[in-house]
Structure formats: C-alpha cells, structure tokens
Length: 189
Image (cartoon, rainbow, N blue to C red; front, side, top):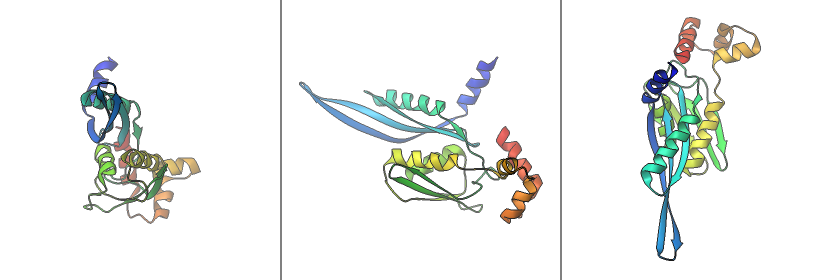
C-alpha cells in the first residue's frame, strides 16, 4: 500500500540539471571520456536535495545523480510558502553564500546553481550572494548548509519553551499567530 504513495510522491519531484563535467582519460587507443553530473531535485513545497553521479554516458550520470539527490532530501521551513524565515550564511570549502529573505514580488535573485536549488525548493522570493568559489558543487553544498540552519518560529518556540506568538512578536512581524500556524500546517503536508 505504501508503494503507490511513494510513486506519486516521486512523480511530483522536479529535477534540475545544474552542471555536467566532462573528463578525459588518455589510453593507448586515444581518449576515454567520462561525465559527472550535478542534479538538484525538489517538490516545490519545502523539500529539496542534491546528488552527484559519474558514468561513461551523460544520461546514466544524470540518472545516478538524480537517485542520489532523492536519497539526500532535506526539509526546509518556509515562511508563507514563498520565502525563508531569516537571513543565513552557508559555507562549504571555499564556497560561501549569503541568503536573505525578500518581500513578495522580488523573485529569485540568485546565480545559476543557487537558482536551481530555490526553484526546486519552491521559494519564490529570495536574494542571494555567492561570496567565494564559483565552483557549482561548492555553491550547491554551501546553499544546502545554509538551508539546514533555517529554523521556523515554531521550532524556536518549542526549543525555548515559549509560545509562537512571543517569538513572532519579538521579530517585529505584523503577521498573526494564525498565519504562523497556517504556515506550519502547509509544511506538514
């Protein structure tokens, strides 16, 4: 009975090919080419993951990367199902990223690899800046490092033993507690 549910869930995932790298190995008869693919998948409702696959043919490398991405999916709490709750920094190796929340209508202001992550995640309004390496692998990993640091007011309230209304009020938000609870209900779907 769990199988049809899983297949429906996987069919809702969107896949974004971020980067393909071609490498050559020189052998006696000439060159042998190999391909490495970086893929981001997401459900556009707060879940996303990335994967890396290598093979002799491009389609096989993409398939492997997609499978790896589906295994490594993480849930990110979204605010009003369109942006993040707070600004955050992420880092992986020499890749550093800054991710900031944005008002409705801003759109996704991000470079190639980070744009793919936010499109797969379902974020509609965000401003980002890559401050280090332009290597797509490091940028994607740094972006996921930042996204893993996202916490919702509900999580903060639970950790501190306070009410969500107290946390939201301190943030200076005009959003009501009912709207916060509605966001939480969307995240659990």
